[in-house]
Amino acid sequence: MPENALIVFIGWLIALAIFFIFIVLLRYLQYRERIAMLSYGMHPSHTRRGAGLLRAGLITAMVGLTLTIGLYPVGFLLPPLYAAAPFHFGPWLLPGLIPLGVGIALIASYYLERETFLPEGEHELPDAKAKQKRDESRQDD
Image (cartoon, rainbow, N blue to C red; front, side, top):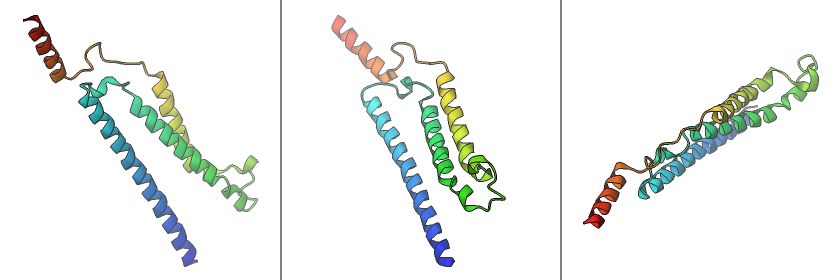
């Protein structure tokens, strides 16, 4: 039995490491996107305000769906007394169904939220606006 527990523990550690690597990769991509927008003189908040909400909802919903699918076979391993529900559903599916519901709620709130964009010309940084005004005043002279 200890060998099996060690294998399960190592599997969980690998899954946890993959999860953290994914989070770090997402943060790095957000950082690169922000730097690219700043280099072109655009303000990073010009994008839709709830874009992170959609991303969080999709990630949470997919984790919940994956857990639900992964825990579904537990219903077939239990004695008939515990798995008497139709389609072998039971409380062992809750760790997957709860994040699935939260993810769906986040996705729904993203689509139900009103779009809020900055007014025209407000997406540029103040330095870019000042530079543009200087260039225009030099052209007038």
